[in-house]
Amino acid sequence: MTCADCSSDPGLLLALNGADERLQLALGRLETGGVTFLASQEWTVPGEAVRFLAPGIRHMLDGLGLSAKDIRRIACVTGPGSFTGLRMSLALAQGLAAGTGAQLAGLNHLELLAGEAAQLNAGTVVALVWSRRGQVYAQAFQRGAESAVASAVALGLPQVVALADMHAFLAALLQPVSLLGGGLRRNLDLFETLVQGDRGLRLLPASWDAPRPAFLLDLASRAAFGPDALTPVYLRASDAEDNLAAIAAGRGLSESEAQKILDCGSRPA
Image (tube, rainbow, N blue to C red):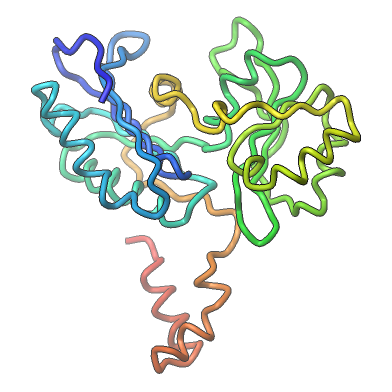
């Protein structure tokens, strides 16, 4: 755990990022016009977020002599990204909010990845998150005006891009184009080939594949908070949904029976 000035009149902001392989928690003290960083924790634990989320938050709070009731706002990355990590982090965020009365805000994973890089690199920055099935989640950004509050300006909505269509996707963007994220790292051979054929493309180093906790907290401090539950951003059907018939048969159910169960469990309260 890293920790800054821990003396506070607590009004806390908690930020959670469970959308990728690196699970991130950041805690700050709310102040007029912003937030002061207090502490953060990170683990590279793909598929195991449930083991670390609640204990990690408890550890940060205990180390600062604070408690969950001091949390006033909770920001959580809503996607796109890991289905399991998103479900676990969103469930915890909403459970904490229900118990503490904290307000909630959702964060775009791709903006979180690209935000700082867009401010430091000319042209276009593209955040890429691995989506399996020969696809990535992708979104392009550019540097915001110096006077703007936003760290980066989105050039379009998040989308699923097939690796086979990546050349055409990148060719439509203003060069130079800088690429980052786990979707790049997981398909490095492909992107290295694309770079060899186009001098306007640049692959950022692996240090950019996860945001700094301080930036996660900063982006969270500028989010729109409210009392409503957060909605995950998946962009595609889950593997379980696409393989529902086989999964249902293995449990002695018809596909229609399994779909009814799935619909009931997915329906908002």
